[in-house]
Image (cartoon, rainbow, N blue to C red):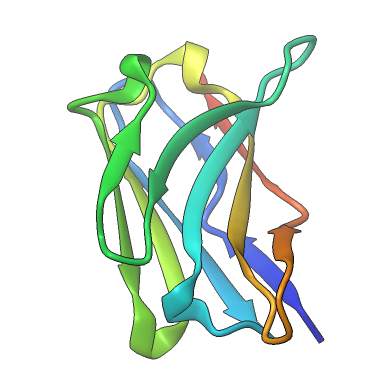
Length: 120
């Protein structure tokens, strides 16, 4: 069964930190690009950070210098370390995997999401 399961969300004060984790199963994790997206209330889902299978990273401008994406291929897990959190970071954060099926053709997988609330 192909699935992504996020954890680590919660309530944090402005300026605080959280680390999100996403465990993948059913895919050849090391061959997939892994990313984090977020969707705030009333807004469209947006890309936060992505890491290619080769380790290249890309971040949306608003989180550069504050968030870090990393992956552990041995554990089929991708992380998002979030520091200096701001109220505008409040959103549901989704894990995303993009790769190729064993028989060819692309595959895209989403996790169910984890809520991050930044508030005093």
